[in-house]
Figure 1: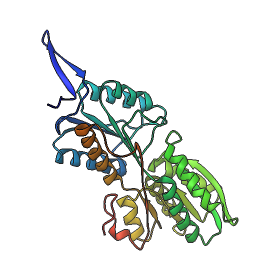
Figure 2: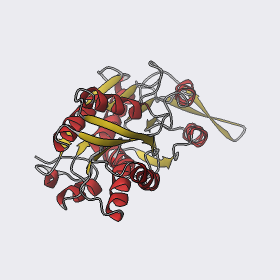
Figure 3: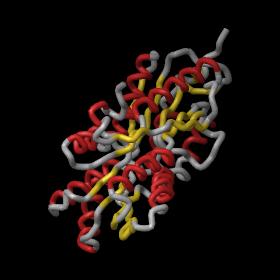
Figure 4: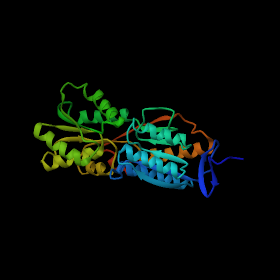
Length: 313
């Protein structure tokens, strides 16, 4: 006879949740915690995870940490208090998240991470991330081609606390720096924000009016940069993003932004739920903790096939 993973005991009218070894049935609550849904990438994660969890028979609660580690910690407390069977997480910082995931583990709740890694192994059950380095190299190769292997360019960096920001930048430069006539004249973070990217791009243009290209750490910043370039009448500037959003897809189709790199957010989130389900039923996912999913270049040749962070055949 299988034991439920959590045994509910009533004592003096109070329900106490005690973590028990063993396996769970395909029932219970899955908590889905991501950054703000203002970014369509994170919304796609939440939608994908929620849909798959419900298909597998789970209840869901979807919460947003707004890239605030303190708020994330509070949401973990909520998930623990509600006796969640598992947590699906796109985290609020590689270092800051370790304690929260450990706290959930200590409470008998396994965590399944997507999109962003944490700095420790052996605490989360799964860490499923896009191959950001491979994807960045794809984007950089297309950027160099668009630039004709020469000219001044700027780079928009993601949030410093996010490991993906550094990995993407490294991937870009390992390709671009091979071309001596490519000159980076500006590099600045816009914290994954469209609004910040607009302001940063305005400043970059004022300081470096001969900029020929912009390579961005994500699509949201690429959209902000493109809006600033359009406002300045500089639609000749080559812009490349990273994520594979519908907004950038539409810009590519309209002749605006030239390319992006698709990371499969929707499928990644669903895969995390499937692994959570298998783990709860059997005690194992059957795969390694850290898993990479390759990215795909999106440009004018295949933008028509892109829909909600997934590429149709």
